[in-house]
Length: 634
View 1 (cartoon, rainbow, N blue to C red):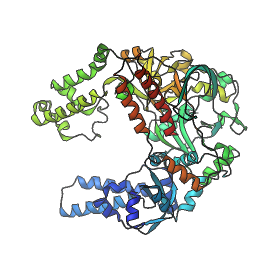
View 2: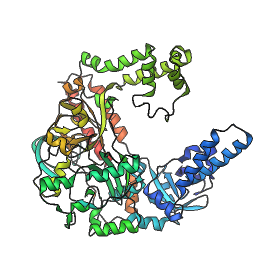
View 3: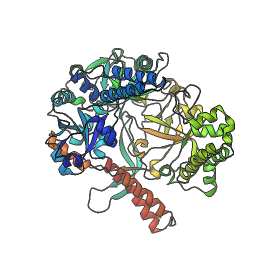
View 4: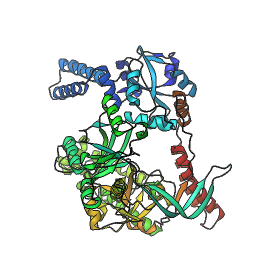
C-alpha cells in the first residue's frame, strides 16, 4: 500500500502533511492504493534491509485466518485489531508516494521537495499510466541516490534519446512483476525486418489545416516482425512453469518479461532444433556483432525488447551492471493455459459494420437465448449465468461467491425463492441494458499477439526470411482445432472498419510442428500490415479478440490499412528538466475523449445515405480519428 495524494492537499498543508496510517485508513481511505510487487519495491526493501517483509505478511495473514475460525470474544477482537494493524503497517510503503498534480505550478513546487509525516520526498519518475492521469512518483530523499543509481544501471548517459521515451523505459521497474529463475544464458539479437508493398491510405497532418488523406498503391512497407518479442527454449519454459505452477512437464506458450530496460514477450520455440534442422549451424551474431553459440542460451531477446541496448558496449557490460545493481529476471504475466469459448462484443468493435436486420437478429440470438433460459427459472442456467463459464469443481471452493448463490448450489429449489429471483432479475436487467449497447455473446476469445517466430529464427541465423505464414495468414491453434478456416481480429482502441482484419488460418504441418508450444497465441505473418491496421499493434503483450462468427466474417471488408505520418520529437541528451517538460505535455491524456468523439460521429453518419456528401465527410473525419488517437498515445 502507498499514499496517492492530490497536490492541492499538500499545498493546503504548506507542503508538509501529517497523515498517520491509521488516520488515513479511517478518514482518507481514497488516498491509500494497493500496488503489486515490482522491481522498484524490491529495491526499496533491499535498501532498507527488509528482505523478509513478504514472509512476515504471510505469517500474519495465516494468524488472522486461524483467528477467524475461533469463537468471537473480547480478547479475540482485540487480537484481530492488533494483527490487522501489524499487517497494514507491513504492507504500507512509506518511502514511495504518488502525487496527482492539480496544476503545472503544483508540479514545479512539488519538485522542490515536500514532507509527509516528516519524510522529505524527491521526484523519481512518471509511469506511462500515471502520467496520463497527471500522477508522478516521489521517493524518500534518503534512498533516492541509490535508487537512481540502480535505475540508470550504468547506461551511457551521453546517448541521445527522446525524453518521453527515456521516462517510459525508466518506468519499467515500476511494473508489477514476479521474479523467476534466470535463464542459463541470454543472447540479444537484431530485430527481424521484412519489406513488401501494399495499398494503403496515408493520413498526414504536418501541414496547416485539416489532415491530408491519400490512397497510395504499392506503398513500400518496412515491417518489424519481432517488435517486442523474443524466444525461449522449451526446457526453460518448463522450468518456469514448474516454479510458478508446480508443473514441470508442460511448457508455457509465452511470458511477458522484465529486466533492466527490458519489456516484451518471449514465446516457446526450439531455436536449437531450428539450428540443427534448418540453419546448419549453432552460431549467430548478437546485436553488438559478437559471435554467439545458441546452445549457450535459453532465451533470445530482440533489440526492440532491450530498449537501451546501444547504451552498453556489449552483453557482458550490460549483464555485469544488472548483477551489480541486483536486477531480477521477472515476468508480469504468462499466456493462459486455455482460451475462452465465449466473449462479449462491444459497441466499438461493432459500430462500423453494415448489418441487415436479419443479421443483427442472428448476432443477438445467443444473448437472447441466455436471457430466456435464465428467466425460465432453470437453476443450472441461472448458476452458469451467475458464476460464469470459468467456474468448475477445481476452483469453486476458492472463489468468493455471494451467499444466495451458494444456497442455490446446495438447494436448487431456491430458484423459486422471491429474494433469489429478485437478485437474478436485477442482474438480467443489467445484462439486457448492456446488450443494447453492443455487449452481446459470440464465440470469441482474446489472445496475445506474436510475430512469426520462424521468421525471427531465420533472421537471427542470417537466412533468407520467408516465415511459415504468407500474406493474409495467421496461426491460431484454438481456431484451427475449432475447425475454422478464417477468423476476424479486433484490437482496441478502434476507430473505423479499416482497423478490423479477416485472416486465413494456416493449417500446414510445418507450422503445426514449429509452433506446437505456442498454442494459445495469435501468430501474425511477416508480410502484411495487420499490425498497422490494428492501430499500431506490436508484440510486447498486446492482445486481439478473435472470432469466427459467420455474420462478422461475412461483413468484414478488409479495407486498406490507414497509416499515419507520425510527428517525431527530437533526440537529445535529456536532463531532468526535459523529462519534467515532457511529463507536462502528456498530462491528462485524451485518448478516451477522442475515441468517444469518433463513436458519436458514427451515430450522426447513420442518418445520411452512403452516397451523400455528409456521409463521406464524416467517413473522412472518422478515419482521421486514428491519426489523433496515435498522436495522443505518442
